[in-house]
Length: 417
Image (tube, rainbow, N blue to C red):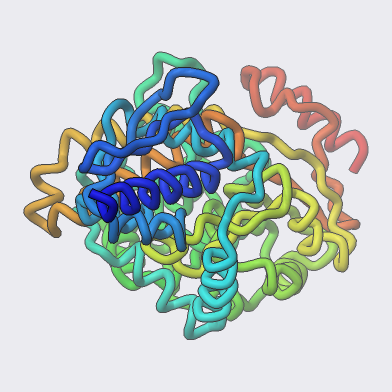
């Protein structure tokens, strides 16, 4: 009896400490023996059921990675809405420095182990993007655009929103027929093909994911665009030649803050002083390490910067930042579509991989959706230009209005060039 009381007291103490590590989130924690802890001020949005004391100990020593791995393994069950639970965690953690000493130390060594050297970057990218294209086909749009969509209205489909995003990027860059574009990190090739087909530009697109490059080359061949879009299996650091435009959508997250100056140098030698470009990336409102669990299990080597950190790319080369747009809510809606499609494909995903993989990706997509909903994650698009570039828009008419207004904007440009 005395031993039982001691263990019960230890259980409750550990549950309280784990709850403290969430920043006091409105979440109930409970062991399978009935011991539990609920937030004192309001009803919990969801409950976390912990299967045994060993799992509880994992949560105590490393709350973030411990929770993610235990959920993936089925040692934790969530009663209620998983996204709502993660929203509560995001909100409380954003204002609390709650990670344990063990978590902070593990995060530090994880960052060192996943350094984005030329060799390390290839290994990190292979972990995520070379799973199999058939997996991504289950829940992405037909173009396989694995970045934030752009929703001109809430009613448009994911397919329409992804095409709208591609055009939104092209409009921001004010592409002209005959121009040359270099793309750093091209995914399955949707943007490069769209630019060549609809804007008449020539594109060199770089990517270190072999599976994506092979798919993109086949698409270019099928669409008769192989002479205008060249997909190159190589690191962005090996880009050479001079171009009119530099664009990167969804790659900066994989560069790492230690390599921002190097990326700036690549952009400078690609554009000189007269080119222009766009970076599209997930970021934060303040400097903070990315989720240790996501870096370990989903995106090795990833880092999500604050805006001020990104200026390290532009300032040494005197690039002018022309426009910054935050599409956070667009990414939340994109993730709603992805998560819904993923959930409808879980039987097939389980056949391709296993149940742990399904739970891992459910947690990843749900956590990303929660982060964009509550604002701990942002989606930035930055348009920039070299100091001698005269193709600088006077207004934003070219983004949101009809061809006549775009022509008026063009007249402004020609009148001052």
